[in-house]
Image 1 (cartoon, rainbow, N blue to C red):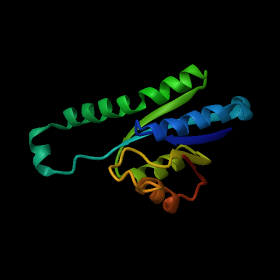
Image 2 (image 1 turned 60 degrees about the horizontal axis):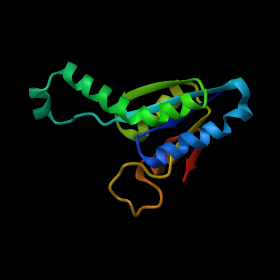
Image 3 (image 1 turned 90 degrees about the vertical axis):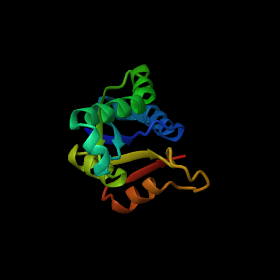
Length: 142
């Protein structure tokens, strides 16, 4: 079994990473295990937490994560590929690397840039951090 984690934030770059993985899947036969991951940043402000309960925040994270995964899940469904999807809350890079290790993945696949506002940067800050933090191979898809 060859497990990969694909980090998805709902961006076109992330969908290109999913497309690449789907195109490469036949070479793995039935031995490929795909984990789609969306990471939501935690609401850190104590003021927000005073007015919004834990249950509401959990629903918010799930709704946002589910929306970010829609296109990626559809692409894998259309390709007939089995996968697991996960929505986690935390710092993006650390959570991506931690989840990949926890799930026994052998590689992380992600887009070069995500939804960040610095469109001029060639390699996104999350991708750069994942490369530096991960003991696993990281495949960046342009």
